[in-house]
Length: 251
Image (cartoon, rainbow, N blue to C red; front, side, top):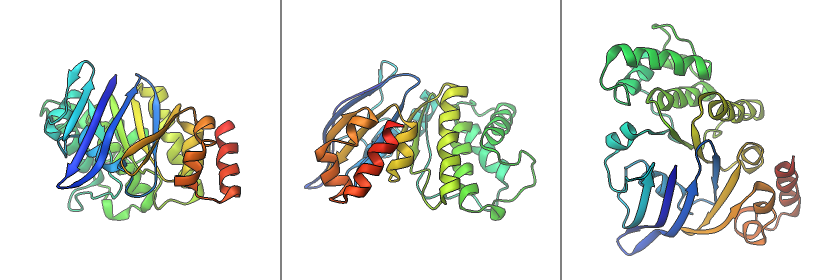
């Protein structure tokens, strides 16, 4: 579904992403991990059209999309959540999601946007009425709203950016199960950026690890969690954390 070749992003003299290549198959969940500043968000920004690549190719369903603006990439079927939810607080929960559907693949059709909003809200477990307010949502509810907005655009590929941030352990498990449900029931392919490695490893099919803008490891969760390079740059020298992550990946 997605083929990325030699992706580079420079900001002046600083190279944030350096010659990264990877593929994503239809129906797959790919985990994208790495320490802060490793280039994860920059790759998401290039895939979603926020940043144009400095070099390289992004081919989605056989078409080059590198450098296209966000609205055209959304219309091709790539949706995205953001690490920090920023809903329109003067709008209701339904209106926030309806708006996303209207400017997604709904073709600026109000009826289709309403249907997309109802389906998305039901999928993530938020109220589908037209009166519920955003201000009543906690951290978990705002993450669900962010996910519903992305789903309402009608994505074939979902870029999920740190869906577990700010959640407690139970909420993390629920959010992880939700991503797997979205893949299994809706057939949506997912790239998931996350810092909570143990939870991510239970859900994803493959993992790619970045460090200082370069890909340092890629493969099955069990293999990646045992990779000495990953242990050094991502888990550090904490042997207990390393063993725990590897055990989670083997489950």
